[in-house]
Amino acid sequence: GQLDPVPAGDAFKHLARSYDQATGIRVTVLLPDGQVNFDSQDREQELEGPQGRPEIDEARAGRPGDAVRYSRGLDRRVIYLAEPVVRDAQVQAILYLTMPLAATEQTLTLVLHRLQKSLPKALKNPFLLS
Image 1 (cartoon, rainbow, N blue to C red):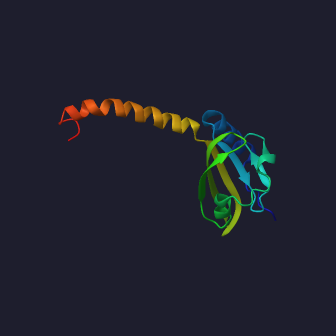
Image 2 (cartoon, rainbow, N blue to C red):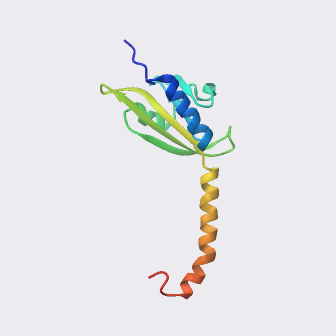
């Protein structure tokens, strides 16, 4: 028989939606043929026919895949992670996580600027960086 790629489906869906709301990480479960089994944002139509996405092709082959691309729909850069769910040496599903990089980029920029401001002071004191 066909195995359910999302065991304890309701608990998984609740957990995935909770992560999405708390972190902004969209959680999607794809079947190996590209069909969307679940999407934490209920926007399955956006992912129908994900052929040509290298990270998903990697996961179909049983290997984790990742990519960073510009999303026209979101008008920002997004990180994509695709992890194969393997059972009995067969890819049963692909766990696909996506997250806009804006928050991460803002944090990195803030840290960079703060470090740039404090580094000249640290360089004046030779003991701080040794």
